[in-house]
Length: 193
Image 1 (tube, rainbow, N blue to C red):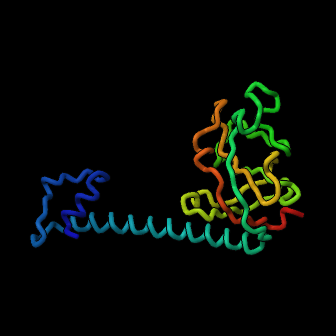
Image 2 (image 1 turned 135 degrees about the horizontal axis):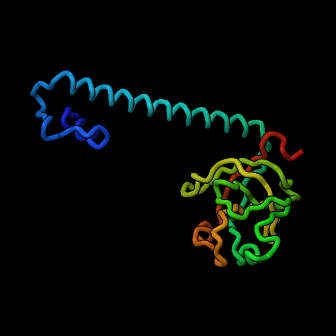
Image 3 (image 1 turned 30 degrees about the vertical axis):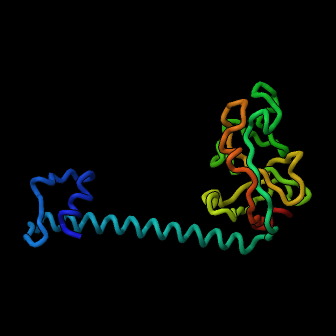
């Protein structure tokens, strides 16, 4: 990569005047510019390394949790929200958004709630679980969830992932798009005592 290309890449961040410092491959460049580009590249490399280390620490933490957990096998995962179609209650209903164990999901997103509905004969309410989606398209949803709800269609090895409260009476398109997916479920750290 030429120094000109590097200067172009970092122009937006450091407002380098590319016309003033237009470089041609074999011409010498002032040491100030070379040092600035090297410093920028070093800082970017350090940030990328720290991000990689943080990702690895999180992977190790999850691996440790899952290794100490109880593998429950492969489940069929579906999705729900707080729409009338999913839950049968209008927003004005006093029990709107209240789960089987009393948790309120009103106003929560998938990320803030990390909640699932389960068959309590298979996974006890209150259990922390780790879910790994077998479908690559949904692996970004892999992670820890808490079993807070039940559902009339959630029997046996089925789970229902809470996708959020949209405040709409109609089911969110993301719930329909999710459909039925296979996921590996592990109970974490003896939370199913």
